[in-house]
Length: 282
Image (tube, rainbow, N blue to C red; front, side):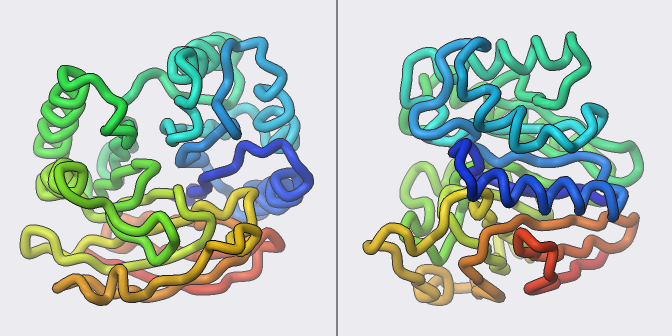
């Protein structure tokens, strides 16, 4: 089964629409079953209601050529909560979208879904510094239990903020790093994140298990548009048991091809040229 991961999309500009055209073609040509939307769904400060104009300009229009039965399973990014209604507005839009059989799915801060015997994806809210402590504890407790009880071959965690990244945002630190690692240690194989507007792949040894970190925040914003943006391989390579396997700064997305004993990750640009491939096996 194939799906796509893309993040940091919600600009509503020409770049997002260009990436959307490539994604639409990939979905059509490669039998993509669903899309993972990794946060910062609506720049710069989220949406305020289901009637916010950005719902159309930054989601419905760029992906209008993708059929509604291809669901966009989403998580919250930091920009999505820059107004006080940000998270609830997206939850409301998700409810409306599901009722009308449209594409956008984001029912709550955390949730999971999957295909029995193949994969399960665990979605969490990475805005930990802004989260109430009771919700933070609940999210960790429920997600960890869900992972432990899962017997499917592939267990994937989606969180907007990556555990490690060679981009300017860098790696999680302190209590946030510990929080996410604690979740991963329950059996996660692959973490997919955005936040930095580039594409990267890293291997991480966590709890004596090799885990892959996918970073793909290349859904609309070009990395070097900000003059302060630099690439920092040392952010990853200087951590014991961690290694940066690939990075690029092209707009695009990742395709995951999941089979019971293998998972292939293709990094693609907006024209669907494969830039890097990494395969993990059971």
